[in-house]
Length: 85
Figure 1 (cartoon, rainbow, N blue to C red):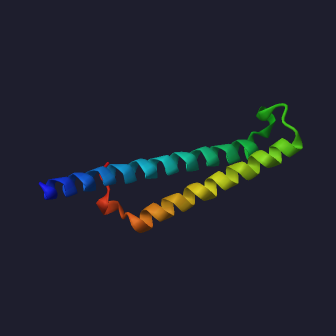
Figure 2 (figure 1 turned 180 degrees about the horizontal axis):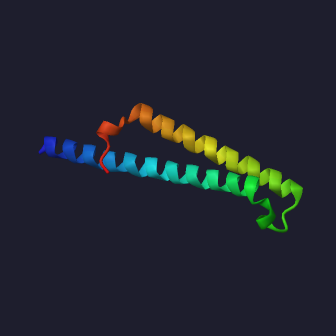
Figure 3 (figure 1 turned 30 degrees about the vertical axis):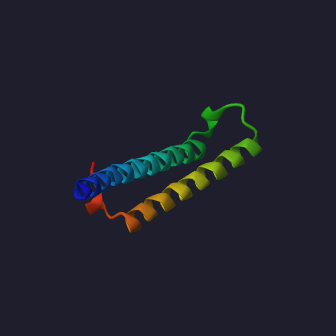
């Protein structure tokens, strides 16, 4: 019975790692979209002050860096060959 539990745990971990990677990739996509909107379509943002604009840009950059760091950690510690999609 113990081997079955170990196999089940490995499968669940793979699904967990896949979920974490997809979450990080979604956060990266959101950050890139935010930066694109701020850089190329700032007119559409409306009644934000300059300070809001800078704050939003900084927040988007931080979100991008954090997402990239999460993806790098997943790739380092959980190689794709061990993941189940």
